[in-house]
Amino acid sequence: MHRTFNTSEEIGKLVAAERLIQGVTQEELAGLSGVSPSFIGDLEAGKPRTELNRTLQVLNALGLSLTVDVSDATAERLDQPYQGRRRVATTGRAASKAPR
Image (cartoon, rainbow, N blue to C red; front, side):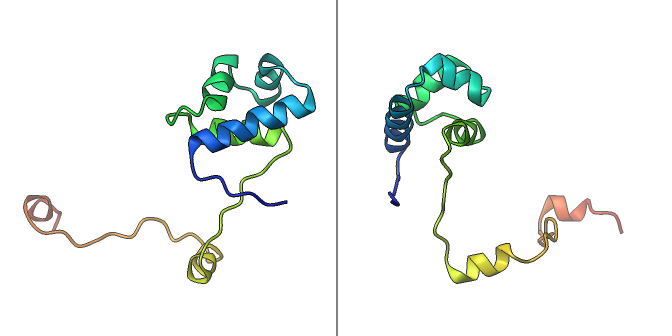
C-alpha cells in the first residue's frame, strides 16, 4: 500500500507506528539505524528540523523507503550523467574581478 506523507509530523507518525508494530524500542531503533535515541524521539514527535540523511537511515532500518513522484522531465534529467555545476554569467563587482 502506498501512502503520501507531506509533513514531518506524518513521517514521525509513520516511524512510531512501524516501530511499535515491529516491537522495537526507540533505543533499539537508534542502535539499528546509527542515530541517537533523542533523534528517534524528535523524529517521532515530528520536529521539523530533523536531518534528512538520518531520517532515511531510520526508515531503512525499519525496512521502509522514501519514494518521490517526479515529472517525466525531471526523471529524464535525473537519468542523464551529472555535469557538475554550471556557471552562470554574472555582472557587477564579482564579474569585474574575474581573471582576463
